[in-house]
Image 1 (spheres, rainbow, N blue to C red):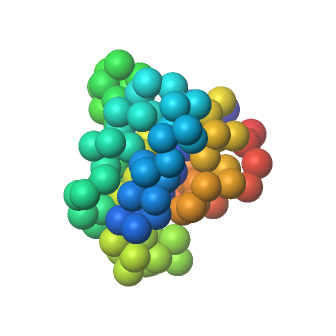
Image 2 (image 1 turned 90 degrees about the horizontal axis):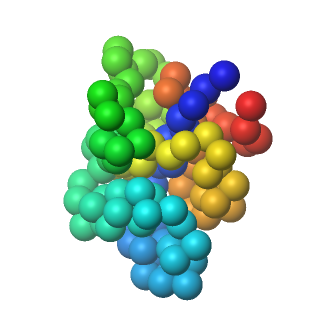
Image 3 (image 1 turned 90 degrees about the vertical axis):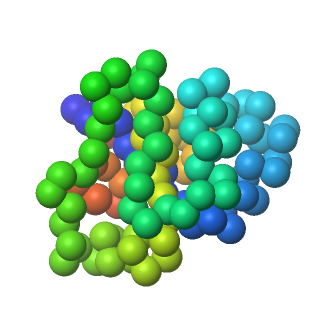
Length: 110
């Protein structure tokens, strides 16, 4: 079972969510912190991952360049926040989209 997903947003989407204080106050600390770090920074396929949640870091290697999702991430200059599997419900209906670490779109958690 996958332990982590990636919530991808472009700059406008991450800013809109970050400005909703009532919403982000429902997020766990790691997600609030990473969203705050994500806002104002170019996405370009970068990942934001909390070291307390993922001590060894995480990445998508090799990057699946021919994947339609990877092409969209590059086109939209999206950046991803690595989230715990059980936090999927917090971001599911928010701007952006969620993938697993293989860049497969997630509609419902495993």
